[in-house]
Length: 127
Image 1 (cartoon, rainbow, N blue to C red):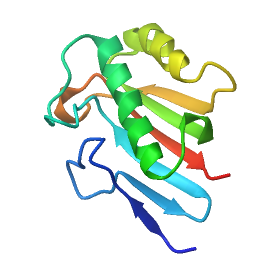
Image 2 (image 1 turned 180 degrees about the vertical axis):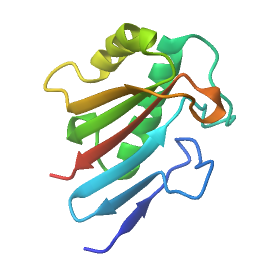
Image 3 (image 1 turned 90 degrees about the vertical axis):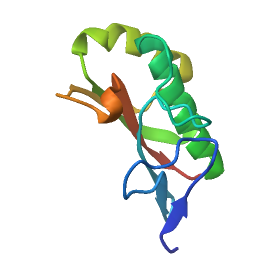
């Protein structure tokens, strides 16, 4: 199978020289999503919970463009501007992966694009 670029208008357009996702064979590598509203291209209003929900919905939209869903995700990385947001992000993240969640790392970073508070990337597998 050749490399496949995956894109959808249901998630924010890339804000740099990268693809929303790239497929190779059964693997789908999703670029990090920040809490941009796909309709406006602006950060969503609200706290860390609202930002995390928008990130998860953006990831869900990119997965859907690949014909997949969150259950196909096998690995994520969460990037936080402040590790004090860990519990709140975990609570929202858990709503999207209520059972058999993927493997994951969480790290605090100095800064995220557009001064977002959270970014999440993912790897999914086609059945």
